[in-house]
Amino acid sequence: MSTRTDDAAAPDAAPGRLILLTTSHRVAPGLLSWPAWQALRSADLVVCPDPAHPQLPYLREAGVTVEHAAPSGRDLVGLTGGGRTVVVIPPGDGDPALTDELARLAGSGRVRMPELELLPASYDLPGGRLLDLVQVMDRIRRECPWTSTRDADGLVKYLIEEAYELVEAIEEGDRGAYREELGDVLLQVVLHARIAQDDADEPFSIDDVAGGLVDKLIRRHPHVFGTETAATPEEVHEHWLRTKAQEKRRESVTEGVPLNQPALALAAKLASRARGAGLPLPREDGDAVGDQLLALAARAQGEGVDPEAALRAAARAYRGVLREAEGRA
Image (cartoon, helix red, strand yellow):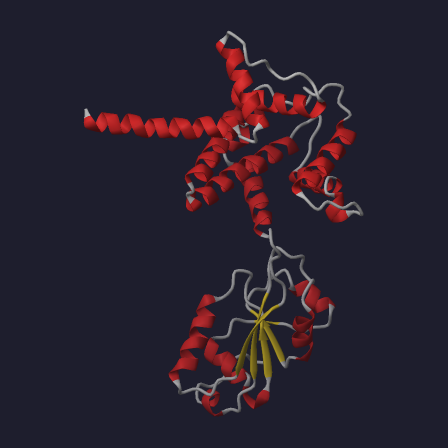
């Protein structure tokens, strides 16, 4: 069947129905919505300009005949004459030129337009763009001269730097920077997972990382995914600690506390573990500056204050005082 019409035929023919059927490359080909399958099976003509479109093998298997052609918007309008239904499957990234032309024809008032419908046959679920990120990172890891030679040890400084930039964006209340820095931290996670995939002895992938995280979250939220109940944040915290203790089976409260974290955060974490286990807390009558700082951090933790964040806020305020003093000098 030809996909060309005479220009004179399009305005006079009784309008039918023109369906633009969109799909997402992030969804497995063939997994289309039921309305999409209904439209494809009942259409008088199905057209796809891309002969390599990933949906075509599955449409052929389902008995749907697809013509490989790229008719203009005017041609498509003409093909709907006589009440016919035409389905167009645009490329994966859409066809802005076609939609623009159809909009111009509709707005001209000189063409009897068919019923136009944009029908999503498949669409992205939340998190769909993460698949793009994984694909992009995989290619960068293979083809970029810098990234392809990196290892986890060499990237630690960037991971720490990006984490602190994210903290700064949060504390400054800059929503644009917050979003950007979240992306930079996510980049580090995906890159580290891609590097781990190349390990000769113990490889793992981003799917292993995500799968382990999902399993952990479900285990530690029995009040959400199981039969236990938790009515308050405190009860949730108790559930979390109890489940974590069962998983880790640590011999000491100090196990699992990273010693490379900032000193105030380290002190607060140790004090939190000690307080939870009923162990001695730092004495507040120490003579050394370090002992005094340790006791102060422990006291802040006990009062529900993050000593690291509190000191940063005080330092920021002090920076402002210094700048004002410099301005008066």
